Image (cartoon, rainbow over all chains, first blue to last red; front, side, top):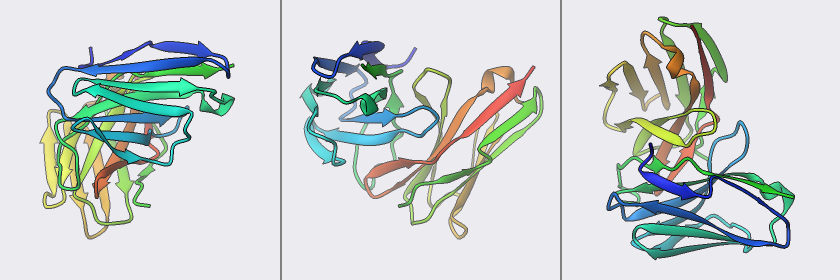
Length: 116
Length: 109
């Protein structure tokens, strides 16, 4: 069992739907991340939150909207997605974040998203 | 980009054999990390080696880092069928963690 919990595990949605992905950790980590992973490819960073503030947005389209309500929760709101957005969306957390942080990241098992 | 390149892309071995995976990168780093991903699951952190370290061990894992050659290797000794997974190196320079393309390891019973 992972210490980072993601829900739902699977999500199928149409291009006009609005849905949200949720991520939760109770390890006291102050940094949380969203990654996108296509089949047989490495994870690609989307967003980084540090102390509940958005620190990195890797030029992600606005149809993806992150939210960090508190230090334990991270959401990813989805709206008007495209078929190419179908992927595994991974949430991760680490104790700290930043240039000199030497902390590993802890990953959830992801949400498998399919856009019809 | 300082994305790591991994070699080989795929590796198939018999149970009990050792598996070696290599990672090369392009720019200076603070640390290099190895992660494992089983099919349909998230990534699991295996080991982190800092830029001033040359070798690190954890159980059956041995990681080396050569910053002069900008390369690292992961050795898994006495492999088991349960080691079958994708293995990614990830470099950290600056604030981002950047993953290599990964090595798919298959351990045959």
